[in-house]
Amino acid sequence: MSLIVMKFGGTSVGTAERIRQSARLVVEGAQQHQVTVVVSALSGVTDLILRSVTAARKGAESDVESLLREMEVRHQTVMDALLEGSEREPVRKQVHGVIDEFRSFCRAVLLLRSTTPQVLDVALPMGEEMSAYIFAATLRQLGAKGEFVDSSRVLLTDDRFGDASPDMEGTRRNAVEVLLPLLQAGSIPVVTGFSGANSKGQPTTLGRGGSDSSATIIGAALDCDEVWIWTDVDGVLTADPRICPGARSLPEITYAEAIELSYYGAKVIHHKAMRPVMDAGIPIWIKNSFQPRAVGTKIAAVRTADQAASSPVKAVTAVVPASLVTLTTRSDMHYAEVFGRLFLRFGHDNTDVLFSTQSSSENSLGLVLRDAETEHVSAALHKLFRVELKHGVLDPIRIRRDIAVIAVLGETMRGTAGVLGRLFTAVAGRNVSVIAVAQGASELNICFAVEALRAADAVRAVHDEFLGRDAGQEQRWGLGSSQSLKSGV
Ligand code: ASP
Ligand code: MG
Image (tube, rainbow, N blue to C red; front, side, top):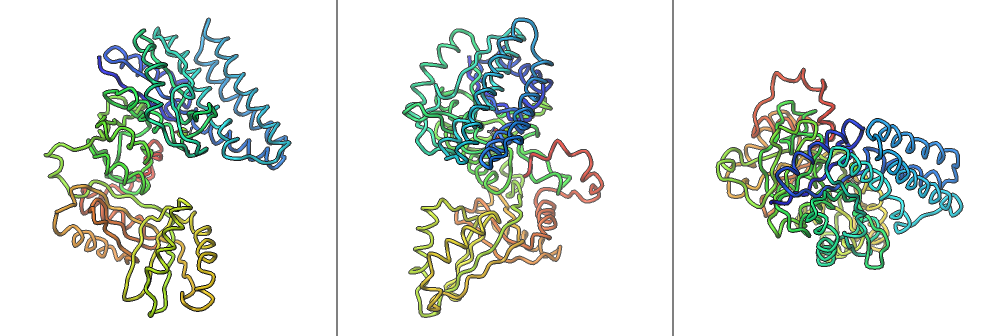
């Protein structure tokens, strides 16, 4: 029997009805496969935890109490609608036990008025803990042997609290010890997503949206056949349907394309989630739990040949807002002397640059960043180059806000002549002026910056040119696409 790891995101377990539907998908899958489930918290619950902790840090006791109430009511409503008979009381106790624990946690923070990433990682996994209790019970109600499994028993990580990475060898050992016996006994383990534990047994989390990674890490550790990510869109789309009504889901993309796509704004899968399964070549499927019959998108090492022929461009995304930071050195300086130190610093700080351009004749370096990174990068640059700026070795740092980065992606652009020409002709046809451009040597993506206000026009220009016209369908845009909001491609 093949082994599938199924991950359900927050919207797929957002309400009693969603949980019931998702549990049915598991039971259905379990007729043909061995299934391990990984769940996210009910949608919005991780945010609720963070808001409560923030309120506690500020000493806002009554806010903390009302947020805790909200969390309680949310879960109680779901349990009331979902659980019957003998499942009801024990699960209620488990869930309220978690909330009581979180209440104590908040009390401690109210006293201390501070937290650290390590301390936060004690509270952050609690949303997943509650949803996994509820999900496992729902499976049992449907006649399957759902079994709650705390990820701290399986997923071994390093010590980087808030953004931990897996120790694959240790996780494999744990998976064999904890999950395999359950699977062999015909149970369906329901593992809490998002978190794990370090070698001392202290809880860690994998970063926001980390449940996708939990699924692929556990999938790789179990040497599973496929990982299915159940979400609320029909797979990976060619563009954000709010911008391009003609956007459609891609039947197949490669791991490399999926990483690029998620890095540049597509929200269907976390960019770190591909790593664990890439080496083993385990395919990932993105499926819509609201439309389970839709095929979805397969993410694998290579795509089938006929598709490669269709279009060199697979998808277009936009990162808005972004900013452009320009550094210019005096002409008698070698730029590398200055810029070398800069990238070393970025490495230490884990600063993500969307793309950069460097021109030797102008002695300048352009850094395109997510807008949220601008302030701290600017502060870091002014500190790092204090002396150079003071003595005019570097010109004053220029910062331009309100730009957007358009990323055009597709592995088959490599070796296809004329893509750049077509691309920028199409963009120019909409009268959009391009501020900066980069095409990676891997030719996997082309990134360019435009004014933020023109981002949608640029995306449409590219989509029309390479992925089919959506002219005449503009009216549909904005109507009834709430389900697509999360696709964010
Ligand atoms: N619940 C966590 C979050 O919202 C993890 C996840 O859903 O992937 O970030
Ligand atoms: Mg989530």
